[in-house]
Image (cartoon, rainbow, N blue to C red; front, side):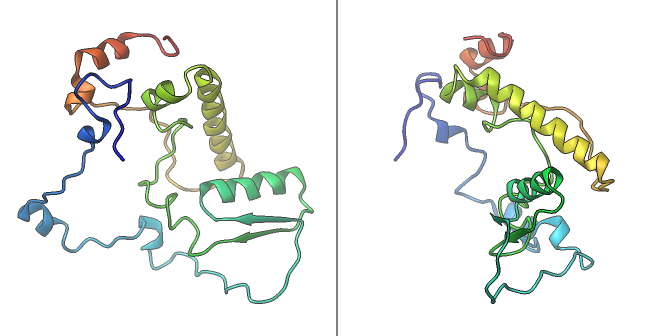
Length: 183
């Protein structure tokens, strides 16, 4: 069901601004014809082989379901808290193959999928969510340094580009000029 959000300018629906087309041009289709739908790091022949499927009974101190960013981060923090804790991570596919692997390899401090989305849904909680997101990103950066993880990490900031009627509307432009957290 398509719902008009009260935070979009009148006449513009959230699905009008989606950057995807249902009508792919032949030139675009040809340009993408040999694309492999796999995360870059899983397409590398040198990536670690998956562990065998768990087929026996086991016990553990902590069971983590899912080896995406959230699951792996949970396991890492649990191990740091108690180095003797036995941790098992169960993953249906390969580590970082699903949503965590499809994001192009970026990290973001946003816990709300963007400021505008957070403002529209959690206006009162937004300052806390923004602070927690920055804290989380800082902690990930610290863990990368602490464990000497070579992953081409670069904290480069954000770039927001207005490209459609929603983001170029006068109302949206006024909101961009307001300081963060303002109503």
